[in-house]
Length: 125
Image 1 (cartoon, one colour):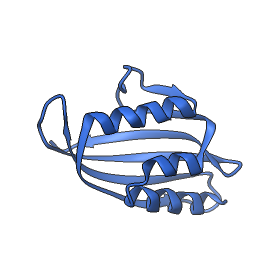
Image 2: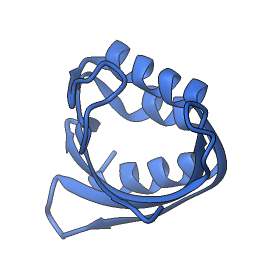
Image 3: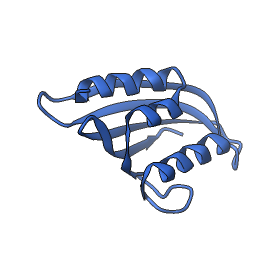
């Protein structure tokens, strides 16, 4: 699969709420995931498919998602990267306060799999 095809599939799966399927279909076993702030373990960077699965499980167990949309992918011809814009409305269970959140995910593809994801945030409050 080419970078653009992977990006389109990732966006489609996310918009269908099939986040686990997106990971299983497109992520490399040695994926590196970098958050804009510390994740559930306090680490910004996690490595490996199991760590990414655990991060996703933590997110879904600790947030109520009211709205979610993914836009993109955005890429440049011949590039092995693509970006996706995410818009969410969530309530963190720890605070109970609903909030709007936007973020950009930058993904790098190698040999038909996503090998790195990096997130940049803008929390509108």
